[in-house]
Image (tube, rainbow, N blue to C red; front, side, top):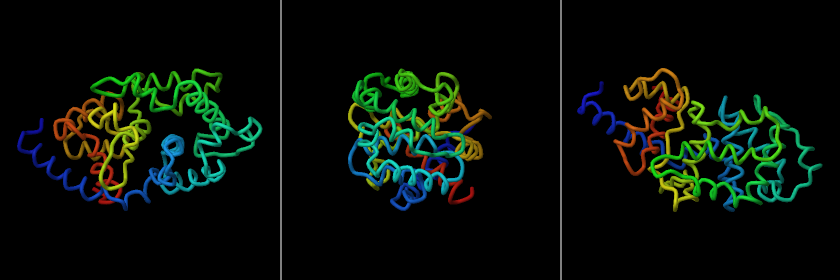
Length: 258
């Protein structure tokens, strides 16, 4: 168990790393660069959602493929989602690892339904948000997202914390949209009813390993229980903006090779 003194030291160390990595240079090296192509809220949302969905594997490949996809959507993702014909949608070919053309077509129709019949992603998260966390809300969002006819295989591309997933990509997306920093990295376009203290760490194998090296995480699996464990500590470090430490944990691995 960490002593109070060592936790204070770790917090100070991570605070320094947050300051170091939560900077504008971070954008170009991260999938968040994709929604940063746009200024319209709905374009940011859709570009961000798709970029976050394919955000696993080599970061250069993620960014390259996501940029190519935005070009295929006419560099106007919201307009394409809402107005493209079924023929235009099904003509798009795309693959990133296990996310293929069929998954993309399904996502476009599901997104169209969200904006036409539910007011968009933000409205769903605001309606079903819990005061202390958005993990249950992610599960509800997934159910609503896939309420129309869809391919069963495509469901795997939206994680569900209630089924044990760390939901890394959805938590990362929520950080982008809810958290507002003064460095121009996280957008904060949903900052209102939703607040940064509700966010959870986008935990994956890399941030999990760094957290274990620092003694912040004991659980060996990178799952929903591990998210709860590390959230508890990070919220004790900063009750208002705990997920800012994602920059520190990620940066320590990606840039410092900690």
